[in-house]
Every structure is written in structure tokens, then in C-alpha cells.
Image (cartoon, rainbow, N blue to C red):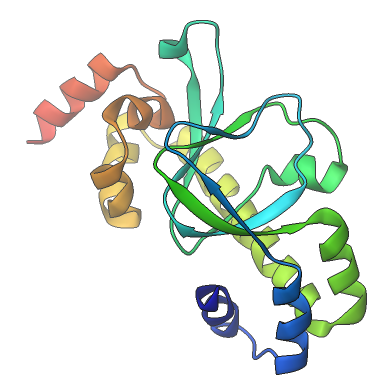
Length: 190
């Protein structure tokens, strides 16, 4: 849990009182590899901070080989189906544990209470929402402005842990190509 405070305090100092209120609302949740954290049709009730493990955002298809992967979150990052969390409407996508995962989560209702009772709550909410927005925006721009090869090469510099820890079939889906096309890209740049 100390990692969350360190992460937040890179941006703003948190008083012990505010930290006590916020941390008292955190709940540790653990998921086994390949288990569902949030399914399509469920409403997201948490913003979570990953203590260990990897999460994947996907749009499931009938043929599992055609699932569309559109995001990953790693250790020391916030994760949430944030649009569902904000709107209180069912999610249109799934959040899955790619590895065993441990996260510290705060519920929607508890976060609203923290917002009203502390300065830190607003900062934490802003930081997590800004981070999630920037990841989404960067991905959209990448899909519109870069080739699949450029997107793949950018993963090496921007998120090297993704290349090392995520199966290639999910990376292929993430950059918008088939596994075969990714194999050709990898051969070309070797």
C-alpha cells in the first residue's frame, strides 16, 4: 500500500490525516491469472492501484482468437473501466488478469466520501483520471497516425515491460494486426 502513497506524493504531498482517511477505504483484491476482474455488462465499482501483476482490457468475441485487446496496466499503475465507473453504467468491455494480480481498490461510494472530506481525495481522483485519459488518448492517436510497425517499435521504448511480459497474440491485437502480420513485422526488424 505504501507504493500508492509514494506514487501520489510524486505530484503532491498528502497529510497523514488525509492518507489515513484514504487508506482506510482501500480494500485488497487478488485475482488469479486469466480470471475476470470485470465482465461485460457489469458496472465498474472500483478504481484500483496494481501492487503486482498485469491487467488487460479487451472486447470479447465469440471466437476467443478474435478478442480485441485495447489496453494493459502494470504494477504501480491505476486501473479501472473508468467510463463505467464515472457513468455508473455497465461496461462494454472486459478487464482480465493476465497474471496473478494484487490490487488496492477504493469503491465509488468510498471515493465520493474521500472527495468531500479531504484535499488528497480530489488529487488522487484527478491523478488517476488524468493517467487513464492520457493512455487512452495516446493509443487513439497512435492508431490513427502510425503504421503497425511504428506502433510495435514504440512499445519497446515506451512500455518495454509489455513486450517482455505479454503474449504476442495480445500485442498483435493491441497494435491492430493479426498474429501472422506481427510475426512478419518482427522478422523485418530483426
